[in-house]
Length: 126
Length: 76
Image (cartoon, rainbow over all chains, first blue to last red; front, side, top):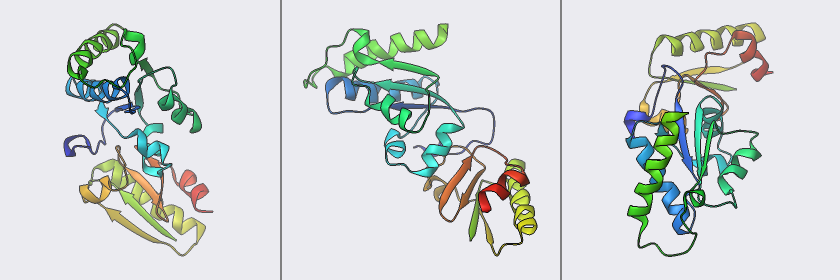
């Protein structure tokens, strides 16, 4: 959490969270979250805080718009949201953008850019 | 009981502090209210939006100015 994004008393904030799991698509979801933050689509935030039932993360997520990115259809991130009766405003799954799930971490950068560009286009048109 | 108001000092944060003071007064409970304006301390709660209300170490709300009535419900 960078200091520039740490506190907001202004309008509604958008929080971006990713499954950040232990596969190529999990790590791509994390990288895409960072790319969306850099593109000004919201602030990267800690899904682990929600998973750990930490009250500050739960209350902040309840008060914000949310973009949630899962790596694959197992949908761990979405399941964490469900546990807290939360529904993301926008939801994406990396494998739905044509990336096959595996444990090869060699092409993360190029695949991240392709997925991030597609998600940014979707966010801008909807 | 201990209440903390997390916020960097904007009017919304002050309004929540005032509402918390009034809620404590109306419920007549023994309670310490503390303002936390240090951004590092605020971040340590995982809070992304201020003002936030913390009761006995648990964040009860973030990014909202709760009413006196809403705060009273959290205290009793």
